[in-house]
Amino acid sequence: MSVGELAGLLVAVFWAVLVTLLAVVLVRLSRVLKEATVLVSAVTEQAVPLLVDAGAAVRSANEQLERVDEITANVQDAAANANALSSTVAATLGGPLVKVAAFSYGVRKAVSKQQAGLTLPQQPGEREELARLIRAEVRAATAPRGGLLGRVRRAVRG
Image (cartoon, rainbow, N blue to C red):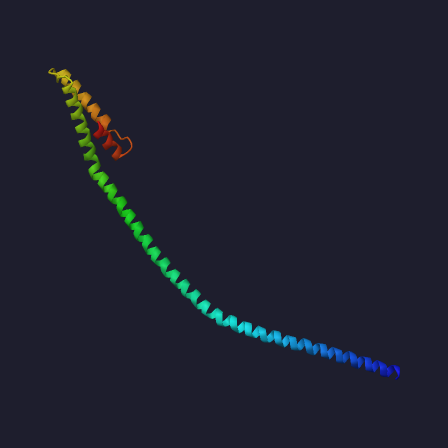
């Protein structure tokens, strides 16, 4: 065998080994591609229903949010109406109620002083002084100190 023949034989063996290795790689690659195709089809079969369910969940959440928006708007309207009603009641009944409480306070003070043995003055100057003191008591009792409820409580307590 000559050197040329030996070199040709080595090249033929090299190419045979190379083709065999390439064939093995191609066979394994085809198996991987088949498994990837099966995996993609399985994922597609499971993903489509999940996407449909997710879309339904988003639609349901959107409907619930719309309901919550309506409820919030109704609650805001109710709060505004309650605020207006309380302001109207306070404006309508507040002044007269404070005046009645102050009057009852003055009457109680006068009755308690009369029961304590004090007599009403008979002189005109003394009567004017007593009227001035009563007006001062009424003004002090009706002076604004912490709102309507505080004034009513103070007037009722005496």
